[in-house]
Length: 306
Image (cartoon, rainbow, N blue to C red; front, side, top):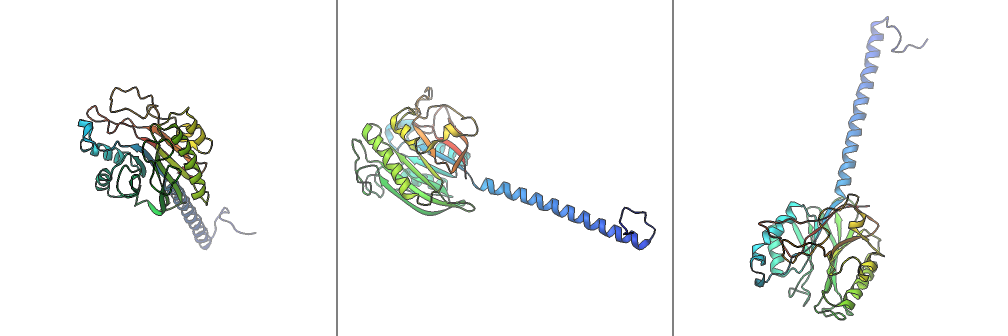
């Protein structure tokens, strides 16, 4: 009969053989357990590596007319907010070159892409996209004006100002490439806002040739029920509406530097395509000394690239 370790042991050699087999089995068990643990940790790391903290933020241009709310009195509030909420990528609106320089100094790990809307260089407001260089590599970038001639600076339709859209294609240290678009629509021109929304979506289709994950951020100067927003939602998803966790914070995003504002006007958005999962969404009402850092509240979304 074939001897097994379950039989009564009558030989010293048999004893040693069984102990050896048991030792091998125990060693293999612990090795498998360790390997399983490592695989779980690796899977968790890879999932987190694909998670990105996004913020869109109209930081209000620098003008001394704002008095106590002028940029020098709140620049550190803005960068402190971005740092605390660990923004990996943020799109700004109304940023002037001096403000961009201040943010770069205070957040040295962040690099930005963008140009001034008035001359394609440094004149006028930017709609820059900042990204963490420790996490992402810039693959491609560009910008276009919201007008009938998007390749050059100029007013579009009935807009009161030049308007621009900035875009980047980024590659995470681990994971797939994705695209981010950031813009600021006109505050008065109805036709300009409607046509700008159409133009941005056309540009996304043209530039996103590999069907990558797409994020569109910005101050759209439009509330959710308006036609241009509804048109955008035919092609992209409103991050607030698809967040896996219930939305956090107030509905409105415009405060006009009024700390007692009812915060009912929602005009800042983060849109995504179907290759992006929104894990969390929130409107951040952070403040200091009974003052907001800007006349808009930043919109935050934690996303995962699918």
